Length: 128
Image (cartoon, rainbow, N blue to C red):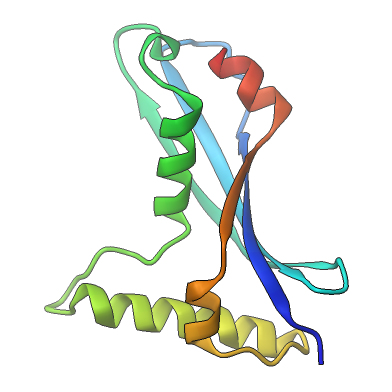
């Protein structure tokens, strides 16, 4: 049986950034399997920030990593739901996506896995 060993979110600039007062980042969450394969779980996430000054003056790689982790979930509660309910739904949804790709995994197991964020070279260069 193929096991999931960790989660990785890849973050990249959405477009070539020409205005230093704004940044738009896309995030793709993948499950890394013991056999070396990676399976995409979420590829429709991202975030943007804009302001009146050069964002690079106050944004760091650590900030981008933190924001990237937030956008791949779990989401904030709504309609009277708790953080715990949102997290349970999130991890169950990811486990379901993996089952559809032939990997049997428990939602709680996914939640406990290490989660790395990898910033693209282009994004790192823009921040620097």
